[in-house]
Length: 336
Image (cartoon, rainbow, N blue to C red):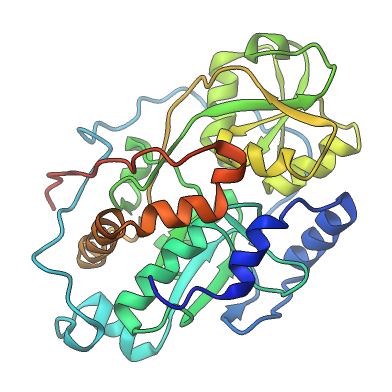
């Protein structure tokens, strides 16, 4: 990927923010601030809020989608912005002049608004910039629509966005509603607690108040792995961090890659225990736009091949998660 802005690279080394900056960042998100040079729009409205956990839904069997990691294979060489197939989803996006993407603005390291520049940045955002570069010839032609975890699927189904890049786990239940790119990152669920709490793993969360975003697989996994925990959903991970720092919850659970960003903002917090799930991330795309899925998979192939995936990892994750692993191998073979 070319033309990475200096502000994004510089922020990677100075991303550990005090609580005041986190609260200010949350305020920007909730207020729908549109500072920055990228195309941006106000967040999609969240239908409901509140701390109380909804009653667990009746157990239903997830639909059988075969291998959930199997996506649609790229078709031939990746075309340049000037040679997109006529009538394709990509050609329509190019004619519009921007890629419309559903993102987080408060998930540090993945998609968060830099309080000093006003720009949204992170691993997910750099992946989107590679997609925008391939379609539009510019990584900056993106309209970011800030969405919560629970809005990821509906934003695609309603046509509010072209693509969602928001640490989204690929699974069969979601394949019933949307399509996914090939896996681009593999995370695992852990827990974040206060230092000295005595909690070392998921077993220590019995009868404790635990926060995770609404509509996340983290909530489902918590109920399965520790049914006596007291789930306390919030709209976002930053919402969980605020509840944690206010003493209203005892722990936060989520993907290790996300919890690393929360721990970087709170010197009294630590991530503990072994991962108790595997969370393969994919880019969400409408089921009606399989051509875009294939195109995006071509972009991801190129990022793996030319080393850009590793450069993006080093820019955002190396300092907290260590040296870059090999990028996930793509799995293809899904049929329309």
